[in-house]
Structure formats: C-alpha cells, structure tokens
Length: 276
View 1 (tube, rainbow, N blue to C red):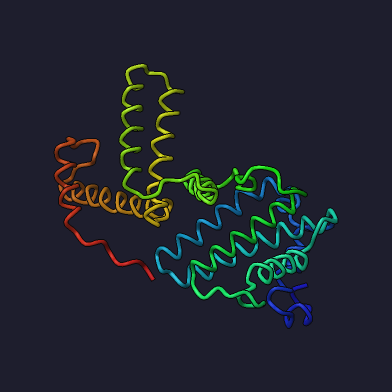
View 2 (view 1 turned 135 degrees about the vertical axis):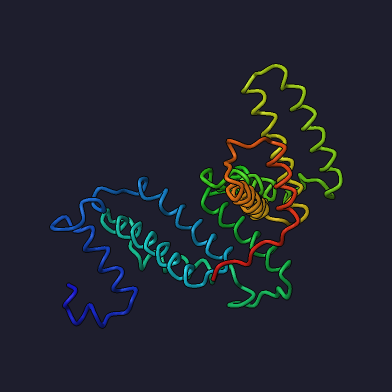
C-alpha cells in the first residue's frame, strides 16, 4: 500500500480513507482498531474536539493543524464503521452536511433576506425547528427535543434555556437573575446543615443553572468563561509552587496564610502570552 503510486498520488482525504479501511481490514488490520465500535470511539471524538479548542485558546496554529487532523480521523473512523454495517459512508456524511448547509443558508444560496447576524440566527433557529418537527413527523413534542444529553452540563443548560426562551419562557433582563442566584445560594445554604448530599447536590445544581442563565443573558459562553478561570487558577497556583520551591518548600510544608499571600502576588502579575 505504502509503495503504491496510486496511494502516494491520491488526494489527502482519499489517502486517509484508505488508511482507515486498511486499519479496519479483518485480514491484517490493527487489532485495536478492529476491536472498536461507535460507543468506544465516542469518548475519543469528544476528547479530540476539546483538544482543538485548547489549541485555539493557546493560539497554537501548528497544534491546531495537528488537532484538526485528529478530529478528522474521528469522523473517518465513525464513517468507516457506518460503511461496514451498510448504514452510511464518508461521502454520505459529507453530502448530508452539504445539504444541511445549503438548507440552513437560504440568505446565501437562496432568496431569503438576512442582512444581520441576528437575522441569520433567527432564520437558522426557525429552520432547525422545522427540521426537528419533520423528524418527529408532526408539530407535536417538546421544544427541548434534540438537545444532546452527552453535552457538557454547562453547555446543555445554556441550550435548554435558549430553546425555552424562544417560546417566551425567559427572564427579560440579566438583573433579576442576580436575585435568583442569591435566592438559590440561600436555599443551598439552608440545606448544608442537613448533610443530605442529594438535596445539597440538587440545590447546587440550581445555583449553577441560574449562573448559566446569567451568562446567557450577558452573551458570555459559560464554558469559555470557566475555561478562562481554570487557566487563571492554574497560572496563579503554579506561581505559588514556583515561589515556594525557590524557598526550598512545597505547598504541603506551607501554611494557608503563606500560600494566600503568594496568591495575592500572582494576581498582580500579567498573564504570560500564549505559546505559538
């Protein structure tokens, strides 16, 4: 295969498809690849998507190219397994997304007028709603249908809220949500003395859901906001570790007061530029 001129001169996507077909070949393929199915590969697909997002966050273009390749491999892997059971192949996957993009962009490929991003978004959601109704076979069912349960919880909460808002179930402004957050925090505090983990978890979920609602109204992606805070925490805590190491100490050998003082120092430092 590697010495085949047709393989060497083929388009990169055709080479990739051929590689995957060989890996999944029952006669001499890779035992690991052959042992996989849709469910076992799904976690890798999710992981690769996050690694793409991480490369973007770090503005690492070389890394992004590499991670996009890994993500494309996941699409090819699923497509190959679909082809093996006669469900779909890579071309069918590509055709489906092309048809969907044409259908959802009538302002580009048709005669719909959508001159602003807001108009495009409204039209997009209307088309998606019609698609969901067509899949159900009628106009009955929940407006919340079709939101994947495997999404990260913050993202799914935002999507549930956004979908409900389209039928008028929503706050009119962000300010009342602050009061709701305070209310939910009060209810959480009231449950803490009970030590009932289930009730406490339920109230904590309500707090998080309300915070996501606030983020949505502020037009801030809660996943992006939390990733930024995670990076900030990591940066500051590593500063604490470095400063303690310079003193010949570890965090375990230090007091909370020492670490808190270094934390406050770290807050005054400008973040390092992203790696390229």
